[in-house]
Amino acid sequence: MSLPTTMRAVVIEKTGGPEVLQYRTDYPIPTPGDGQVLVKNTVSGINFIDTYFRTGLYPAPKPEILGREAAGTIVALGPNTEKYNLQIGDRVIWLAAEGYAEYTAAPAATTLKLPDGLSDEVVTASFLSGLTVLSLSRETYEVKAGDWVLLHAAAGGAGYLMTQILKNLGARVIGTAGGAEKVAVVKGLGADHVIDYRSEEGKDWVAAVKQVTGGQGVDVVYDSVGKDTWQGSLEAVKRKGTIVWFGNASGPVPPLPLNLLSPKCVKVARPTLFGYIETREELEAYSSELFDLLTSGKLKVNIHKIYPLAEVQQAHKDLEGRKTTGKLLLKPLAE
Ligand SMILES: NC(=O)c1ccc[n+]([C@@H]2O[C@H](COP(=O)([O-])OP(=O)(O)OC[C@H]3O[C@@H](n4cnc5c(N)ncnc54)[C@H](OP(=O)(O)O)[C@@H]3O)[C@@H](O)[C@H]2O)c1
Image (cartoon, rainbow, N blue to C red; front, top):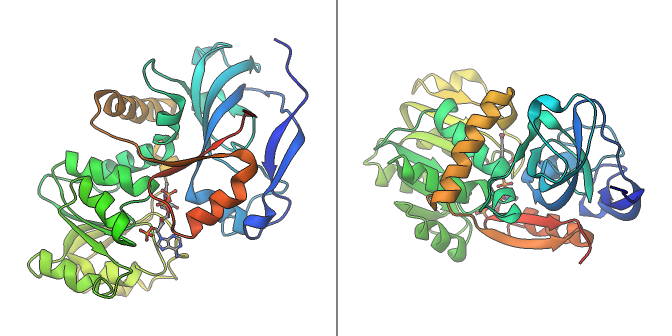
């Protein structure tokens, strides 16, 4: 197959606001190296982590192409990819880096064939986020039927999926979300209580959580908001409870004096998805569970919008401006 030599891609040369995202139409197409496959991406996921790399909260060498996941078709194989049983023409999803582009040289080790019947869009809208919520609700803290769970940003990309997974596990879910529209979305997913933590009456969401749980607090808090919520999360968790901090949407949690945990014997975890799917076996196990949930209809995705690659700055503004519910996707290919 003859490939073009240049492609559309979004590149950052320096850290900063959305304006540092440069849309290019003449970026060189990568050559797949050892253990890599070249994928022509049809849909790329936008995740909040992309903003951390863009701002420099998470450092990375420049120039950099953001984007941690995409679905598409394999168009070339690098050396030493045989053991993954991937072929040119396979429809795949990958997890790695450089997804804001038409083509990505992705590690074969983190590239998986897509099941028939699941669209590129549906899988990309649930892949990184879905594997995250499955691993966090199983390995970071094992959610049990009847647990009280507080989930912040429950209408977001990860939150939308997490609410459903928690309900499937039989947990009693208290979700927080900003604004009436988002609250309605989370209620629609079956959350037991939803608090608009940006409204006047929802500002004291800790008191609301205490009231709902009969004064006890929750068994576990899933907090991806960070700076603005960490203190309340510590107050809202019950004695012997667990706090899972897994993101920094409002900024990172400041250094935490460990003695703050002792009065209630609280456990704290700070997990990352990539630590749970380091081996092919782990990646395949969580992915096949996710694909089954999607195929059976037990997990529904919510695509906020599919942005053309050239509109990536607007996508980042919308995500950071808290204007979105569910997942944002990019379409790298020209119409
Ligand atoms: N550790 C991991 O492996 C892992 C993996 C995936 C995702 N994450 C984390 O999970 C979180 C969700 O990721 P996502 O990609 O699905 O994003 P998202 O939830 O779609 O967007 C972030 C949401 O956070 C809320 N938020 C609260 N304060 C905010 C602020 N000051 N600025 C912006 N947003 C704020 C907003 O919801 P409201 O308007 O409802 O408040 C916003 O919609 C992120 O923190 C991300 O880093 C972590």
